[in-house]
Image (tube, rainbow over all chains, first blue to last red):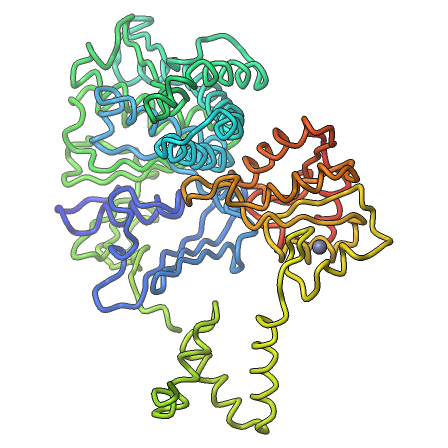
Length: 366
Length: 201
Ligand SMILES: [Zn+2]
């Protein structure tokens, strides 16, 4: 639990963990922002204990050059790196997953698919690339059937993999989401029954070949219209995740409180689903302050205590969180970018003694 | 013309050397001082080697590879299988596949891959030349060895689309080479494996 006033570095620490897990920032993707004024670079270094053992991670930025070291050497592939640290992030604005547009829901689900299957990153990236190529071709106005055919073939294959990845992970999440939703919302049984499905794939089980063929047909049918309008009209980049609550669309009918509970249930479900794969991603909760009423907050903390996952929570006021599990909670206070430990265990040690900051922008010359 | 050079020959040499990809000003300065320490003929030999590269190298009219002669040594080699042609994106890829020792046919260099974002369509590549080669009748199989990325895959699909109606067999390198590894950088044994396990398109 990281607490402290605003702008003292709580979120920076959380962001450093997220950076190692995803190689991205959750606030600003410009790396220059991570470098202290006047310094030549920055680094984040961590020892991670997880399903691949105890591993040393280092992310380094010098000038515009980013480099990674895994156990002291260059990782043989990005997939190797992403295998090591998995994380699920919750921020207050994630309520947009429930109430916002389809792009916010797709971004959440794609992130969840990546957490479950890191290699999905390549498929999603190639799909986006092929999409941009086809869009450029259509914009150009000279697009003919022969020139479009290879792009549609690639898009049918990559798009089908995107659709199946999303469908499979959504299916894996359904029961855990219901379980977590009931646990946080309280009450009993089916009252808050949650439904999840993709707008383009129903509940039916289809293989890759079938999905690919179906997408190829849809692309072929849309081709004349796409050429006429000069833009891409068909594909999973336009899909939506339908989230239902008590038989109605959560986007349209969920209250703000229901939406917050639901989005926390989605995030926790990722942790529960990971357990079946023998993995325990970290949960990063940014600014857990006024998200939930007292009853729901208490049940949320109780659910977290019952999971084996490491949880990082930032808050301006620890009193909001209520009692945290004794013996399992480490409280750090952040002030002026420095971390002050008030460790609960071992007892009697290091009251308000500065610890080394996890992320410390420095001049990387040795 | 030469007066801007004479003002500071060292500065001029460093500026020119740092035009090479991967050579920054620091390396260029080191190379310039190294040249100054060598006997004068060293600089002359290096300059000559660089100059002759552009004077003597042209393209083979058959396979479109860069070559000092037309036809190139590979297209001239009577021991090579004329019925088998490996299609690559760049001249460097020919070197990588030659090093693997696993290809006994000839080559065709496309000079890139289809990429509408970069304004590169089939007409900007050496595809017309390839169709002409196939039209002359000797070729039975085309092995497409474009990069295993989005553009390389789309180019392979386009080639299959225009070549198969001409009655030629079209195959694609197996994914023995990790996605994202350009052919040029792939190691020998994986290139050989990818050629051996090529699949019908
Ligand atoms: Zn030749």
